[in-house]
Image (tube, rainbow, N blue to C red; front, side, top):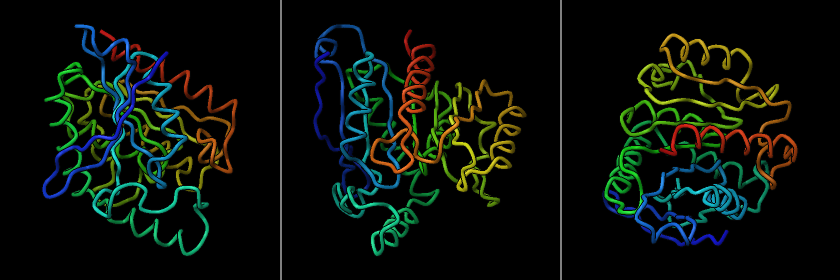
Length: 252
């Protein structure tokens, strides 16, 4: 399927969020509106592997928007995404950038993205999906909790720090979610241990959320082809399950 993609700007407080949209060309001109998916990248930000992922989702009949999570520090890429995550001094810089994405910053950005979608003439209004990878897995759940009337399906893969023990930890918010949740955790993930997976599952269950808390037999980062932990089989399984999840809840 022929996919259209372009860089766009989502208005924010003082500067715009440089973002990227993807959708099937033959669909956008039709009167039927497309279901929209917000795609949050991992710590390395937008890059070719996410362009490919967004294009594959768009080919399933979705309008995908991929915001640049570090837009406050400049347009993407702020740091060369081809540099391995663990390489110093890049590792320190990435950690510093990630630290700027506080709960308050996330909430501000979510409001800009939702408002932009609500005024987008090509998508179904207040009927969105969201997916986050690695550190943005919790972003997807936080967005779903803050906008329960808008987010009908929230997903995360090999997420990190769902449970932090802090007052603003996302596990304290999930009871506000009204949509469905799909979480594809990595096995034996130091950034998301089994105890955290269990605690998050307990919080979702207590909130009577329609959720799936699945553990994939792969390491942290298993979905990304440019990750040392990439697992082709697990990645394809995750993509198939994600599409099935979104198709069930987003296609009306």
